[in-house]
Image (cartoon, rainbow, N blue to C red; front, side, top):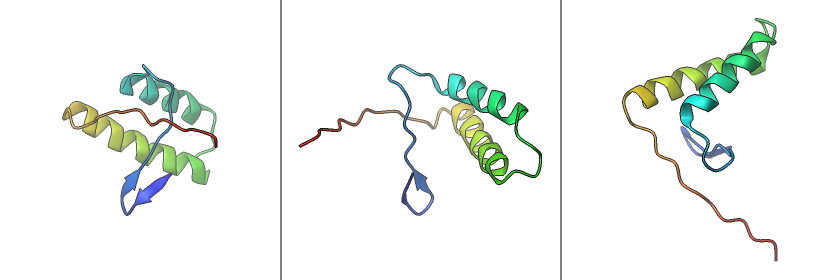
Length: 68
């Protein structure tokens, strides 16, 4: 979800490593046609995550959602 220009929020289970997210993306990409719009987005996201992970420029946190 885009929360500000060029800033996105990803939801993933607690304790999930960034590398695990990258591998999951590669698994998804194996099954998507090369002309699929979702594939293009996933490839771009994977490139960004890989770059930032290698630069130690990724941080994770937790958000608490409460139903009222």
